[in-house]
Amino acid sequence: MNEEDHPPPKFLPGLELSEVFFREAVKPIIDKHFPELIYSAARIGHGSDVLGYDTPQSMDHDWGPKLQIFLEDADYGSIKEQLDEVLHQDLPYEIRGFPTNFALNDDGTTRMSLIDDGPVNHGVMINTVSAFFIEYLGFNPTEELRIIDWLVLPQQMLLSIANGRVFHDGLGKLEPIVAKLEYYPRDLWLYLLSNQWERIAQEEAFMGRCGQVGDELGSRIIATRLIRNIMMLCFLMERKYAPYIKWFGTAFSKLRNAANLTSLFMQIMDADTWQQRQEYLTRAYEYMAKMHNELGITESLTTRVTQFYNRPFMIIRGSSFADAIHAEIKDEEVKQLPKHLGGVDQYVDSTEVLAYSIRFRKFWSMY
Picture 1 (cartoon, one colour):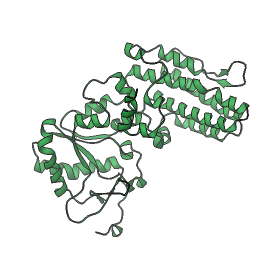
Picture 2: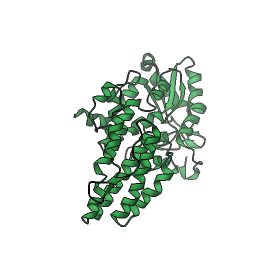
Picture 3: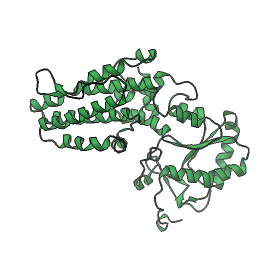
Picture 4: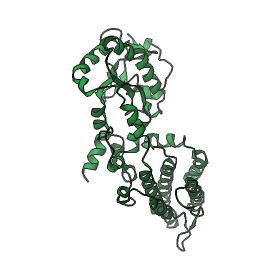
């Protein structure tokens, strides 16, 4: 079959395509060949489609009708190969105009590839619940999660589970896991909030100081770092996981407070002098202070910036927010965590660590 003669179908978001693939192609095959099989089906894990940020551009690699089938541990050894072979032989070559067959790109990624005969090299991964999560996250979330499990998981990884879609949960295990990982427990959330305010406190006076000594590049760099820290604080305040850098701005734009802050951020980055930059940063700081008070997690704190000693730098004194939030933590185990260290996203800034589970586990094992 000549792919050039086959017009590309109208784009369908990947999660929707995967659900159609399950309901119209995979499920009927399982019902026919394994009518008594107890299983679960989902699209979770890596992929812009799982996060909901895929576009027609995404279709060039690692995108298409994909999903996971989860079997009981007792069934996996005897059923996995049979099910895989049946899918190879019986799956349709297309679903809603999208090829179900995948080929390899030169870099090892996959792409949809039309065929008109032979077995389908499909995108259905067959696994057990425990094996998948131990490989993907480094632990089994059907068991009780430890504090350390939460802290070493990048928010990107948590989001790729919480934002996925469970199509069928015959095992009764997937939906509880997704619900468990939906967001941080309250005291861990407070711990991360406290640490994020401290990140702002650590650098809030530096933007002006760099500008004062003529380091315009340094002033701009610190300003953008402060913007990113404020954005991360917004995610935490709205109890939303933040994706890694590729989708960070896209996800931020969907937050409730993005409309009020984005114009300020653009003005900060466009400012010609550190004084102008400070004016817009001041407005952002004071807006965040009001947001904090609206959360009602501490007594109200001042929403007005103040001068940094006798220097002409205006700051919100992020440490006062950090300390007030930390004082509200009740869980003794969380209280014993290193103050102002936080989760892995708050002290590691490497895509290699934050986007790939095997790498963040190796990173953590060094400590």
